[in-house]
Length: 258
Image (cartoon, one colour):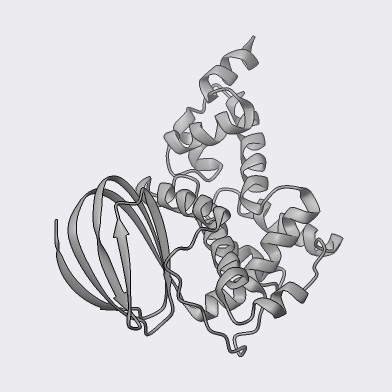
C-alpha cells in the first residue's frame, strides 16, 4: 500500500501503530516533516483542528489503534469542570509506557468485541485520557497540584452497592461514577486507592464469587451462569473465571463436586 492523503483532526486524536512488516513514509504538519523509517512502534497525538499530510511510500502488515476523545470527556476524566479551557500539545513521538499498555488493552477489547465488558474498556479509555492530560496539556500544572485520597466510606459503599445491584448487566464506568456524583477519572483513581483494585477488577471478582455458587447447581449449564453474572458468552466468562481462580469453570465445578 502507498499513496498520499490529507486529514484534519476533528477531536483529540491518539494513534498507536504496531509495525509487523514494513512502514516507510512521512507526515507533514505545521510546516514540519516527520519521517518514519520503518520503526517497530510509534504513537502520535493530534489536537483538534490539526491538518496533516501523510505520504506513504511502502506499507504492509501493520496494526493501528486510533482513539478520538472529545474535550469534555478528557476534562471529566481528569476531574476538571467542562468550563476549564485547555489545549493538547501535538506530539509525534508519544512514548508514555502506561499509555502504550492501555492502548494494547483497548486494541484487544476492540478486536475481541469487548469480552471484558464496558466497564473494563471505559476504565482503560479514562486512564488514557488522564495520562494525556498529565503529559501533553496546558492544564498539567493544575493537575499536579491536585491531591486526592481514596473514597469516603459512604461513597465507596454506594459505588459497590450500585455495581452489585447490576451484577448481571454490562455497566459503564460513567454510570458507576455518576451514582456517587464523581467524575470517571476521580472515581476510578480513588476507588483503586481505597480497595487496591480498579472498579472493573472488583466487579469481576464479585461476579466470579457469584458464579462459584451457581456452579454448584447441576441444573445450570455454563452458558446460563455466564449470562446471569453479566458475561455475553461462555468464552469471555471462562477467561474471567480462570483469571480469578486459576481454573476453568469446568475444572472448578468438578473439584467442587468431589
